[in-house]
Length: 299
Length: 299
Image (tube, rainbow over all chains, first blue to last red; front, side, top):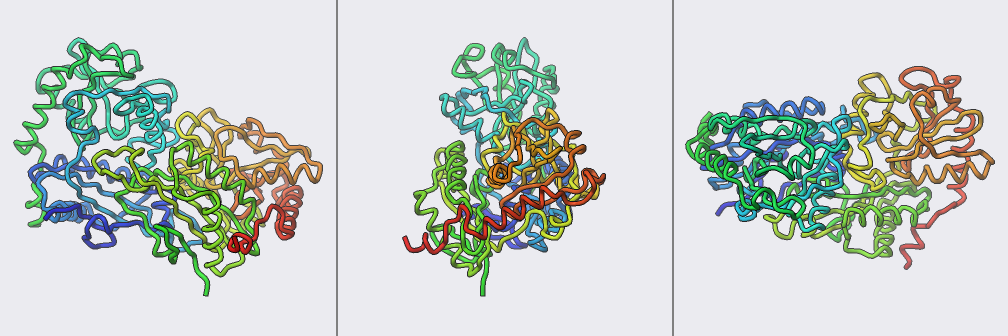
């Protein structure tokens, strides 16, 4: 029997039992940072990179989970191990925690916490849709700008992304791509975006999550001799691309075959996308950037 | 014996037992709208106005709590009653709730919920500080713009406000005032702001919560013959004001006596602020806009 497992309040529990108090700013101010890590065949992908990013998110928000980096790694491994699953996604959350003095409402005066949650590996873009290619909507709702919320600090303030997603569904799309207020492509709810034009790959820069899978694509592209550019991109450039895809930890690459219900390129999943996706999964299978759960448990 | 009371999963429980699952987008996407209502002497202030705003927030986010407006009123009254307290703040939350199918991650496919929480009346600006006047910091971190998140839809996506608050504390301030990305005054973490200059009151318009206490000040000012203007305001106009104050449901009016640690006006709480504050509390005591808890319980 396998199930989702959480670590919360210093205990491992079935995920369905893991809950946050409605009295905590963790909930009422969504005052929490997180990171999501995937493991396939019990091999955790780029663990140190995820922990680096998580530590930076905590630092920016002045949240200090009461565990060392090494302890967090061990907790992650234990959660994965206890699911009994080979393939998992694990979310680590640094929480503001309860106020020490409820009358102060001072975020500096809270007992910061750590929650870790391991669930069966999932796909932000459902697997079959990802393979056949999705219809991505470039929505009107804008991504928050960096001067308001730094998207590099991974957080649960998803209202703009959720609004974008609802807008996309209303228009018959599979998911949403949001632009910054100044009209440049940013990211979607849970993924970065890439386009290919004349054999070159481009991805937006700016106020967006610097995805670990996004980073991985830069490396994969270099390996097969494809030029990559991180730059400002406006919607029309995506609409005129040869192919496009999304990247995320939970599902890796997903082909985009329509933008706003209009075919992109030849309307089929792109060859470069397929090539990168296959290489990604082959290398993952070979243990690329992997840390085996057993090696962490044995420490 | 009195204590904070919550209504969650169709039950009244001590607030300390009210928790949200970490599997719900209610938590992981902060996909929840809310409103906070005060009651003094068991008289709920402007209940219908708060419910109107709450219903609009739900509508914009396509969240449908499984209760009628009348049922919500009764639950609010029951929560207040069960605290055993005369003076309370009650938060009603419309939650996205759990996914019906965890693999879909579709916000339209969730079981929306309602949580109500009544706690002892509190002050967003601590009471003594409010009386003597606070030092408000105009912070660098910007309020989210309307095209990203509509601040009129009361929500827990507080990361910009929390960043602003931390920035204010770092500078020795008591709280923060955020500007929109284009540099106009917006609001602080949990309050609107007002200034008085040459006997006229001004408050920012734009992407900010249209506070019920803010609305009340327009009415109080009219009653004592003070002109009010809702307009774009830049920081320098506030710095050069005669007096200033904040408004919020939890604490009403609080004097501002310093901006960025520099005295505002004569550096003492303003006379107009005091006059409005006294009138506010006198009228509250007289039952102005009040709905008595007992009248709702008896229905």
